[in-house]
Image (cartoon, rainbow, N blue to C red; front, side, top):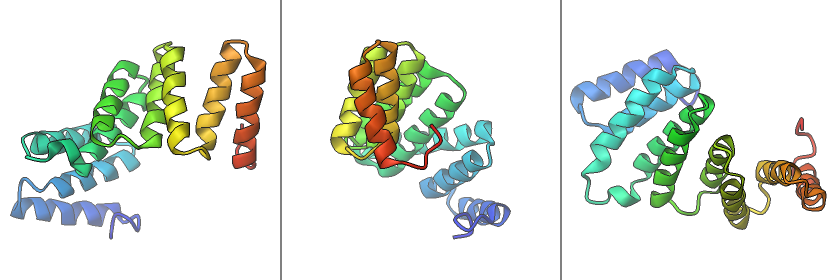
Length: 172
């Protein structure tokens, strides 16, 4: 609750107290990672998210653990932010093995693949994202950009139109 209300120092203090009681509390590490990521302390966030992965690795249901998926997804976002596209793609693919219907993960994987200059892979993942969420404006916009790179103005215009229709106040 403290973290959600932006009271990060107090939230960190309480989460550290929880870790004194249970040093393997996955939820506390995940929340500490989220706070570190939100405050742009990426190195610390990575440590917390990797601890979540370590703690959930041997769990009986690790292949369906939403905390593990969340940690992998956030590690992907951090890697994407730092333009470490190979690493980001690996994290997003691992997250998708746990949760196969996450349109935002497909979208971010597409961004990582675009950074790796894999246009076909990026487009394939955007198609999946749009299959799960046809109203995903950012996915339409990125798809339009990729079609423009291929000089396919007809398909690009469709996706740009859909993006502008879905998010008319967006900057691009």
